[in-house]
Length: 366
Image: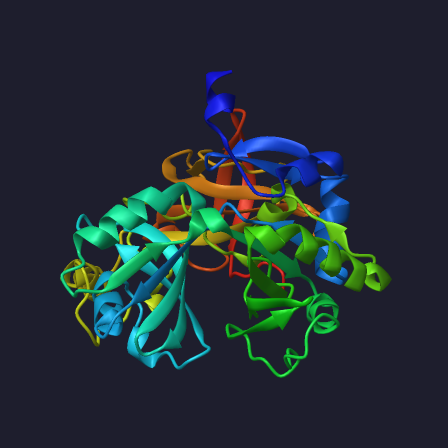
């Protein structure tokens, strides 16, 4: 009971309960994991449109003349490559060779950025960034006052376009606009998401959250829009091979090992850059790979990965039964010699060694 009392609640918690959502503790919040049926919710997003309330995520504003310089130092990606209205996926490297968190960086202008971080890491990220703020930038944690709805799926843009005069159809992937949506001013709307199904993410102050939620569902009615829980969010992101903090990346994993070399830019100085540069130059001893089950079975986090002789060569970090592909899929770190596409591996599922094959990600070609 004690844990339940300490849980935080998203602003629309009561609404989700009234919709029949199954609520579970996640990242310190009571969150909807399921409304009706995981496969139905998953396929609604893949084929049409569904809405996730992911208001547990954290939002920081970074302002100041040296804001770009500060973010160049604390994040791994090249912030100088951003133009106004563009979004960048990045991570906060720690000083021990791992990752404090992965995050999104939104560039409003040269002196102001909007950051989105994982719910479980809000306090940790804030403390880490503050401890390295020798650049005189102003930071604001606006997480508690913001709601975030992910309107995901091929009909996501068409749904949101009904609610605004902003031209959403011309927006490229990983860009954003700010304006009036559903009669609510100063809404940030972005072509981002965690599903690989297309769509948008909508940031709105809590006082307008319920009005926005209702407007989105009215607009999407003709597309059979549905609310979607964290269960389908996990199966959708796994099909795309997207890393989840605390599973596929954490305080001990280098972005190079995790296949995130593309967000780790060595044309600038950042925290612990030399460590990761050496890993890149010398090669990794373990590597994050995707795999598909050949034998019937569902891989889960922490299951052992074995070679044909029964030696442990790694560990599953994420795994599920793919609703789109009707087979078990997963991700995990393996010794580098087993990381090649097509390598045969075995997953220890309840003391049975079930055959799998290393596969290029994303698993689902969309």
